[in-house]
Each structure stands twice: as structure tokens, then as C-alpha cells.
Length: 405
Image (cartoon, rainbow, N blue to C red; front, side, top):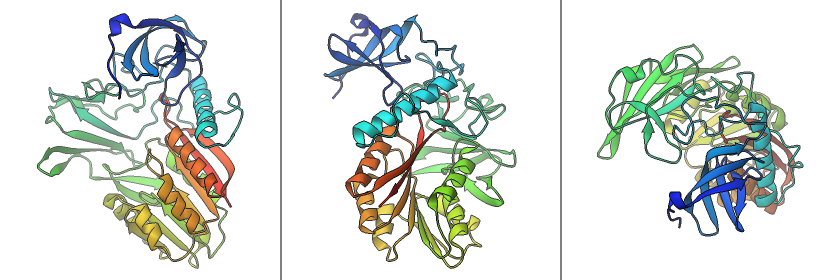
């Protein structure tokens, strides 16, 4: 259990080492590991220790004494130690940040998954589309401060910074939202859809066991398109935040699945069924696709968007229960689990079901690496790994593994 330390007595001059998972760099002080936030590898910094976990400390940079050549003026005007936690890596060049993300994934795969992907100096995250490092986000959730204004949380804090100029957001996305007062405890979801319309939906504040939902602008559902197919997805439900991610990932899944007509595919943690759509096209009406998600809103969107594909079944349930109920083995399973990963039980069920080919997508490097290690413990071989910079200006990364046996 962590304990606070006296920051005034723990300002250290450190030389930072390699990047760690979570956006910090590793440094050492008198034999103790220090995870330093707002630093880049190879810098000399003055850092303030803010948490003592016994064998290691957490700190943040208060002064850069010798900067890395990869350091730039922050690309997000509201982020930083004293600002919002939205863009925690906005002080690195986009090219350098992609190298850091590749390094972190390679390191986590080696340490937690027992798999050597690439030499860490050759592992680089790929850009997603051509949007660049700023203005790429199409969905955002804002929080309410005590004064009724909207904003972003500070890094790992409940405090809300009521500035909305985050560099991830395209022009106009949040215009005018702080010209009104919002009820304390409310959250505001904003989506820019593929028709160019803005939708604003308020959830909360919670009264009793329920949180009311109110459409403030536009509609409750946003129009999203991939290829010739249209989805109407609740603004409060999951859709890829990066404007190009849904298209890039569906094209990748279609390529990696290697399905033939008449085969069976499972789309697990399937959300609105964007992968189910391309899997269904591959197997044809003689095949079968099952897409599973716990979200009722996402499942409704999937049923509506895929209504013409009679060989697709949309299941609203946990992936564990859905797998236990399946009687027909899949030729391919696609998984896009939450940040915590698929975990031991789900991966064991896939192995017991004899699924010969798995496409596993992970949005947290350590959880992704642990899941890869679990597959390997069940006899799967890692055929391919791809890493994507789906969240520019942040430490977050999306990874894809193809596993076969």
C-alpha cells in the first residue's frame, strides 16, 4: 500500500532511463527505482517524489536540466503537471512517442508474455490514418466541477480542470459547452459523427440507483459509417475514439482472419459489431458469426446495423457465459477486451473450444502481454504482432496479436 511522502524533502536530481509502461521513465536513486512522470529517456531532471511504494517511488518532473532532443513545447495547451491529464505525453515529438510505445509493448511482451517480438530499438507503433497527432478524437466524456463547468480530470485525480482546449479535440467539438452551468455530478458525452453533426448527451447526476440521461444537442445516437455500412451508436456507448481507427481495424481484421465461405467466427467483446460485419462478409450466408457484448446499447446498434446479415447472431451477455454456451467451434475468434484484458478464464475457454486462430486486440500494454502469455501457455504460437498509435499525445497504445495452434 502506498504512503505519501514529504515532497519538500524529496526533490531529486535524476538521469532517466528507459520508458516504463504507463507513461513514466525509470530512474534510480540510491538503489531505489523511481518512476518519473513527464520525462523522456536520457534526460537530467529535477523530480519531486509524490508517493512511496516501499521498493519504488513515483515522481514528476519539476525542472528539465538537460532535455532530450525529442522534447518539444507541449502540443496540448491544457495538459501537464499543473493541468489536465488528457495528454500526458504531449511534450514528446509524435515520432519519438511512437518509438517509446513500440519499446514499451516489446518490453512488456518479453517480461510478462515470455515472447520476444522485436528488438526494443526496432519496435515502433504505427500511425493510424492521416489525422496526425492533434484533432483526431471524435468522442469525449467531460466531467463537472463544483462550479458547474465542464472539464478534464487532473492526472489520477478527481479534481476537474475547467479548460476544454485539449489538443485531441477537433475545432468546434466542445464550443459553447461552458457557456451554461451543469449540475454537479453530471457527465457530458460529446460525439462528432460521420455526418458532421455534434451530439451532446448528459448522464447523471445519479439519484438513488439510477442516473438520468438527457439529450442536450443532436440525438442520443450518432451516425457512424465504415465502408457502405451505417451504424447508429448511442453517444454514451463505445465507439473507437480515433476518427480513423474503426476503418483501420476492420480492414486489418478482414485481412488477418483468413476466413473462407462457410466458416464460423466469434466476435468477442464485439461492441456494435464492426468486426462481425467484415467477418460475415468473409464467411457468407453459409457461414456463421456470433458477436458478444455486455452493453445493451451496443447490442441494439449491432442488431440494427447487421439486420441484413441473417447468419450473424448478436448476444448480449458476458463473454465467459457466451463461450460456455457455444456448441459449434469457431474457425477464428476476434477479441477486443477492455483495458484489463481477456484474462485467464476466457482464454482457457477459447483453448478448450479448440479455436485454431485468434486475433487479440489490447489497449493496455501490460494486460495485452499477460494475455499473450496465457495463450502461449495453452499451446498457441504468436504469428504476428502489430502496434498502433491510436491515442496520440498519450501513453496509451493499441496492440494486435495473431495467435495460432
